[in-house]
Length: 72
Image 1 (cartoon, rainbow, N blue to C red):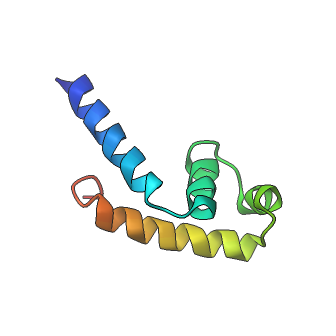
Image 2: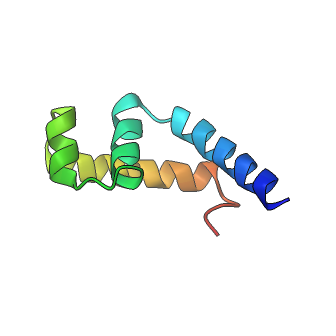
């Protein structure tokens, strides 16, 4: 049963990530899946570290709204 819940949660997260713009989606994946700092993400995406941080803030807000049951 736990595996089913985990898969459903993973699917919901994947769908919510797909709703983000490409740069935000990549920034989220690099930060939370690859554990990269803002400076490395910025270099990979060709934007400033401050821009990365802002995109992460906005992406987290959108993900919280899209995934209310998971953010509790």
